[in-house]
Each structure stands twice: as structure tokens, then as C-alpha cells.
Image 1: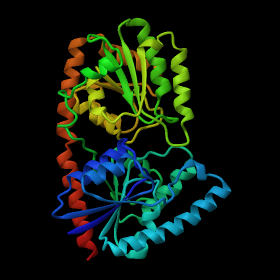
Image 2: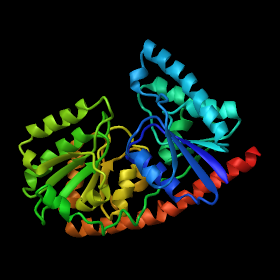
Image 3: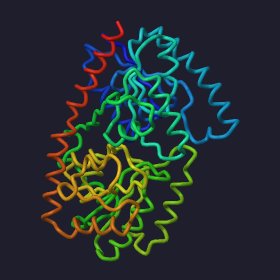
Image 4: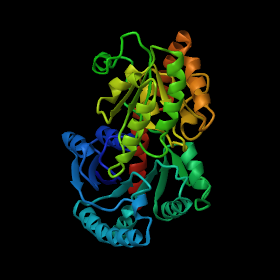
Length: 388
């Protein structure tokens, strides 16, 4: 039995949260024993416990912008040392064989790995554009302290190589996978039309994502206003919430929607836990991230649901969407081109149907959940064997 300590940055159910949850859920429990320590309570804690996973909540610090002040850096450093010692004691008590750190925002794994002499698999989901100092610091730490570095896409892999701290061929790519049985064209979405008063024959476009400074809700709203003017039966749906302490971003989005002359056909639902059904409601899924998104899980979910995807031409989506095959890629940060690409799919029912079918086929071929779990299981076994 291999005992694995998982460290993560939150307890919600967005991209990286869901991917870690599904990986742990599908591991062969006759070979692997997962222990999860999270910095806060949340839905992820409840979901893991429902699966019988040992979960502990300890408020270790997460690398966030709020620490980017002299006092904040001091506070972060003190707490990093304090909670790393606590985590190390737990690692010893639980006879942990390896650490799986699931984000570059969690640095505690470095110290636990060093204190306890156990390997650390560091999985990187992020492409850090700004501030550049954070990109350089986290890249240096990962290069120095990870026994093995895994990235979720080639885009993230190249981003780390560009830092100059990694040796050639030292970073592996394992694409995320999603449950193609849960996310499928058969998911029920009829009740959502009733809940949101959307006519049965009305087309729906939308996005699911964290409301933050770069997920692009504003760009989608600008593109949507163009399309809503052309299609008088079109509806647009936003799903997602902000980080704790940034709720003002949600209000800002609602205020912008309220200014639209088409606000009656724009739905801002906030966070939902029935996203498999939301995906099946959409005729087209939109990814308007203004910064490169590493490998957005929501796109995989949309593909599994048999939906065309339209996004900006940067980041991991370029590895998921084959332009013109299962969706379109628009010019980066260009809402007008984004609207044009959505319109190209929206106006052609046959193309929309074909692209949706291609999406699911591409998901099953390249982003299989079974392959994802198998590859991580192999990495775990190799790390432990090499450490003996």
C-alpha cells in the first residue's frame, strides 16, 4: 500500500479541485491510500468524505496576492514554517510515502518533502503571467524541490521551460481527464430551462468559470450583446463565483449585465453543483479567458457533453480544440472576433451538430479519464520504488 499525501489550495469544485477529486476517487484503493489536507472547509471536503477519504482541514497559507506586501510576506513566511512543521508531523504519523502537491500556490510540500525525506510529485495547473516575480519564484521552487514535475498541458510545460530553471525533458505532461459517463449528451437539462424561463427551442451559449480578473466574463458579455442583437431568441448563461474576499467581482458582473439592453436574456447563476446538466443545456460552450488558461477542465466537460467550443487562441485550449473541427479559436482578447466565431457555429445547425460529435470523439481519444488515472498511478509507483 502506497500512502499519498495530497495538498491543494482550496476546497471548492472548480477545475483543479474536480480533477484532484476524480483522480482520488478512481484510484485503486488496494494499491493507494490517499490522505488529503486542505487549508479550508468547503464542498470538496464533503465530497471526499462521502467517498470515504481521510480529509483534514488545517489553515496553511496559500500563495495569494494578498501577501504581496512587506507585512504580508512576513506573515506568510511565519505561517509557512509553522504549518509545514505540523504537516510534517502528520506525514510521519500517517507513514506517508509521497506527496502530491496539486498547485504551484502551495509551497508547504517543499518543506515536508525535505524534513521527511519523501518524494514530491508537483502537478502544475497554472500559467502565471503576472506578476512576473511570482512566475520566476514559483518556477525556481518547483524546479528545485519537485522530485518530478507534471504539467496539465504542453502550454504549461513550455511556460515552465521558459523560466530557465528546468533541464530539458525534465517535465512530463499528463492531460486531465473527465468522467465521460457523468458528462454526456444524455444529461438532463430540461429543468434548467424551466428554472431560468428559457423557451424549449431557444439556443443557449454560455460559460462556466471562476469570476476573476482573467476568466473573461466581460469579454463574453461584450460578444453576447452583439449576438443578442442579431438573434432575438438567444440566451446567454454565466455560471461561477468569485474567490472569498473578491465578491465585488460578482457584483461588478451583475452591474454590467444590468446595463445590457438584452438583460432579460442573460442569466448569471453564480456557483452551481449540477454543471453536467448546465453543459448539456448549452448549444455552444465559450471559453473567453483573457490570459492563457492552462488546460481548462470545463472545456473537457463541454467536449464530453458533445458541445462545440469557442475560445481565444492561447493556452491549453489550443490542444483541446482543433480549429474548425470541434470548435473555433478567436483572436486573443477580441470580443468582436469571439462573437463572429460563435455566430459561425450558431448560424449553422449542421456544423454545430457535427462539431459537437467531434468534441466527444476527441475527448474520448485524447483525454480519457482511464488513461489519466493510469498514468498517475504509474508515476506514484515509480516514485516510491525509486525512493526505496
